[in-house]
Length: 147
Image 1 (tube, one colour):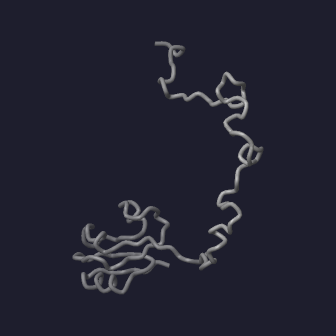
Image 2 (image 1 turned 135 degrees about the vertical axis):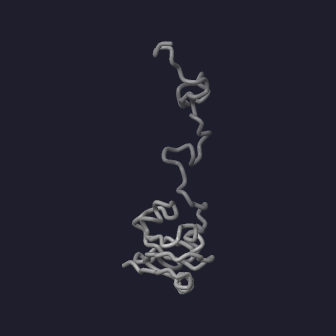
């Protein structure tokens, strides 16, 4: 086999639809635009959301709320996910990232108290729920708040 023998798989390359190139093409004359009317004119498409002169839905419905640009997003981790690690393990965001529990090591982490904690662990996170703190201390572990 030579490089000159290579060809795309049949059906892999679709032929371009050439419009307005005479009657033999099957797409000549009106060039698939039909006869007259707004859609046949140049630039003749209606704007997205246009409802034929009726007040569009987006303008009928009132504005509500706002986006708080100062909102702090936290990656949430429950205690039942941390109970899989051996006792006395130091758990921090980098460790959680390597374990595949959070997406980025730079994320702020909040530990929530869902599930049981049976081993003493040293957990370093940005925030803890009250329930999580109680369960960590009851298991003999330590919670360290990161800034």
